[in-house]
Image 1 (cartoon, rainbow, N blue to C red):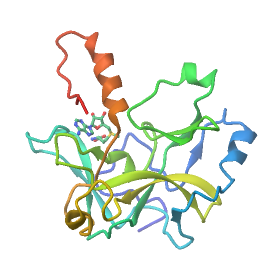
Image 2 (spheres, helix red, strand yellow):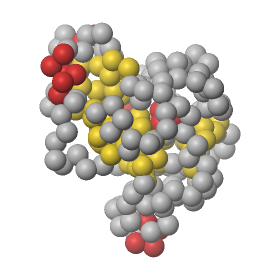
Image 3 (cartoon, rainbow, N blue to C red):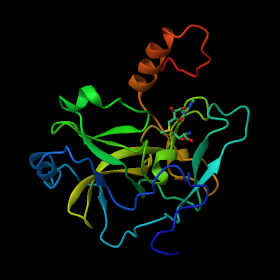
Length: 216
Ligand SMILES: C[S@@+](CC[C@H](N)C(=O)[O-])C[C@H]1O[C@@H](n2cnc3c(N)ncnc32)[C@H](O)[C@@H]1O
């Protein structure tokens, strides 16, 4: 694949990132705080992890009426993924969530904290990689099989968010957790109760709007 390759089914309207991108307003101090590796940051992206389209995943349009994200896309395992394994980094625009930027940046559904203490988040709405297609497990299957984790990217010497397979036993019965994610299975995380509570709140004002929201 060439240097400018994008994964199959990538949206032509969204720039594909093969490394993080910084909003110009992110301060030097914030950038420096991302270059500090705290001892509890044990998850890593190793030095030999390739950049560009990830061979472990596929973006697949969803055309199943029983899927709550029908008509959108999801991310699926292209091969068997071991429990606890790194799947891929989550790239997007790294931006400040501190005032005044918190007031001007509309939080999107693709926005994740990168470093809460430093007020830095990563938003993959307008540019990102395959990880922006990871759906929430609610309404799809009983529990998540993956999670977002803050980790240390050895390649860039910087903190990064990434998607990992849930380790055996974490939120999974031992048997299911021990299996990892089978080839062809959708990769699903939990966005957290807060995500759906906020969505419900926002749409409560819009009478008659057909939305998918969850209680837990
Ligand atoms: C980060 S995007 C995930 C990728 C999205 N499906 C796409 O094709 O761009 C988050 C959006 O996906 C949809 N979504 C993800 N999981 C969902 C779920 N369990 N139920 C309903 N909608 C979901 C919602 O529209 C949500 O705002």
